[in-house]
Length: 141
Image (cartoon, rainbow, N blue to C red; front, top):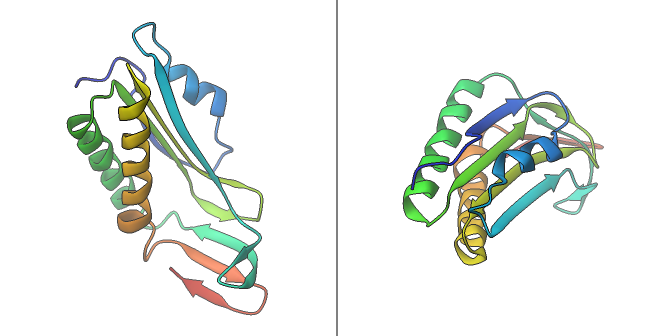
């Protein structure tokens, strides 16, 4: 299905504009908007998280992969549009990381597509790119 409006896949160092992202998904044709808003946890793997870094290096590869995931979701599910915004840089616990929003005529395909994109980002985008800094160590994920 072709997107209605507001095509957006973005990497940003800035706070995610949640209201702006949601506005891009609104349409009288949509009966549902499903979304995910991820943030940095204060613990991971039983350790206290100091920060999480998504470096700017490799961001062109990440952006292209996210665009590909969006296109796949638009083709696979009966949805109208998808908005994906990923933060880059060093983030501390409580900071937002990722927004995924899906618009559709009904809720089921919106939720399914949102879950699909999140799972694919975690499996195909974040590994090898994300770096977790703990109070006493650093792990590259």
